Amino acid sequence: MIQKQKRWLLPLAVVGALSVSLAGCSSGTTAAGGPSASASPSGTYPLTAGVLHAFTGQNAFFGLNAQAACKAAAIQINAGGGIMGHPLNCEVYDTKGDPADAVPVTNRMLVSASHLQMVVGPDGSDIPSVIPLTEAAKVAEMNTVGDPRYDTQTSQFFWRLTPSDSKMAPALSAYTISKGYTKIVDVFTSDLSASTTVTPFHSAYTAAGGTLLKSILISADQASYQTEVAQVLAMHPQAIVGEMDARTAATFLSEEQQQNNGNLIPFISTQRATQADWAQAVGPAIGAGMRSVTAVAPVLTASGTAFTDFETAMDTIGANPFQKKNSFVAATYDGVIAFALAMDMAKSIDSSVWVKDIAAVTAGGNGAVVVNTYADAVAALQAGKTIQYVGASGPMVFDQYNTANRPYGAYHHDKVKQAWVLDGVIPQN
Image 1 (cartoon, rainbow, N blue to C red):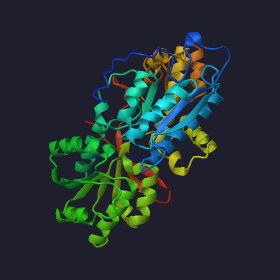
Image 2: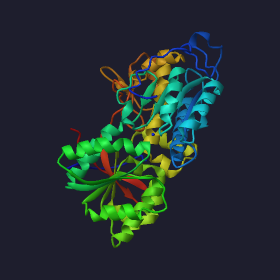
Image 3: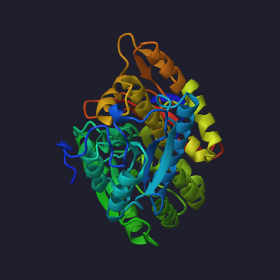
Image 4: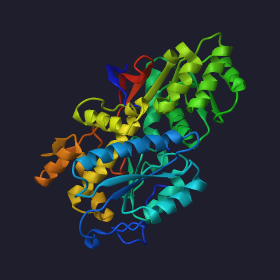
């Protein structure tokens, strides 16, 4: 059984292991012309965070969420005096979610962004083509990509703010088994962000004693899924487990209702369902059927000073209600602040210097002072204290591969409150 608890989800993509041997650009200087600490001009000047994401296409929510997170974090950083006096600006670079488009856009960012200090994103199928470029330029990059190929990466410039799909898959399995669903069908779209969950889920579920009656991969955003729905219903599963984007899920689940006399088989989704566009599209399509949907996603804090500051900053930039309750927006917001604090701790904007302090400002440990805002963190650092920044998304402690792992929980969507509400934490083995 999962541990019962009620809490908001602030709802809410070349690699191998990325053991990259870097050469080329001198440390402390990005290809965008960011000066090294030893060669910094006198006075202060704006630093840039490049928001490198899809802003068009079916994954446009990635970019819009990341932009909101970056802008909100910049408000807090600049209100706290900036990064050693330097204000932070967020500039958008649209990869269109396409690896071919991502390469020239990334190169343009690297040569044109003024004093580029960090890259926010990307998270989709564009990330494999982007990472080698940011690595070669020695620019610190943060993401929420789930691809397990990054689970043992060793680059000091790669930072993942949320767990891998290899962690989500066992959580999906554990929750499914805990509900007594031992005979299921899984349905995933064939895109990269969904498909990386399929194999680890199969392994975890069958190892736990579950029987996979059928596994179906579907192409996203088709006009109809009548054939696939019929295949699912013919197997008489206790539940369906999977991942679909908003448009695909709206079509698939509404057609399931039509073929199943208005009923929906319980659907257990990955964290994709907690993104802003999903409930907006699926809710009207299936109505009361949303009660049959459960989302498995990281458990993130939604209270306290840090969250209050996050909400205030999000209001200031005019973020929409879904972004203000999005777990991945909150985690990205915290990532931008953590990167800024690493620079403050290192007293340097030389990326090869300050990148080593990202883990230090988030890890905690003996004698560390817990701080929840950028201003308080800077004050503590200036007083010579060791800090642990715990932000809007809760503790963000990175492992040896620079991934911030968190527990998972099960959520249902509350139509009145327009939010995903935590039903319970899924125990970790």
